[in-house]
Figure (cartoon, helix red, strand yellow):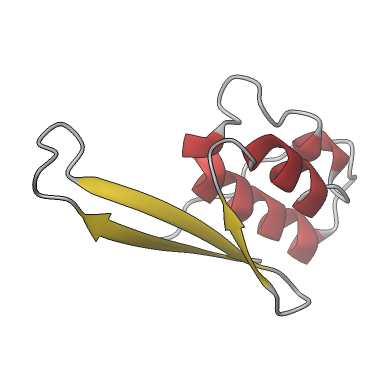
Length: 94
């Protein structure tokens, strides 16, 4: 799974000068936009096979702002195929 971030600059908004849009590209090749209000349902759906991750969606450290790490952890599970009920953190690569 690949996460894309597209941002738009809004110079008139000093407190929030950028608006970020997240898109997930799954194995099917379909691009899906992830918005803050649709995040829980989209995340549970795309991470559904990895129950240790999908069950934590919406809880502390598993929110919209943590989507990049969750994608990394999901991809780690896909590659290693450890127990789907055991959550493991992927090492961050530079």
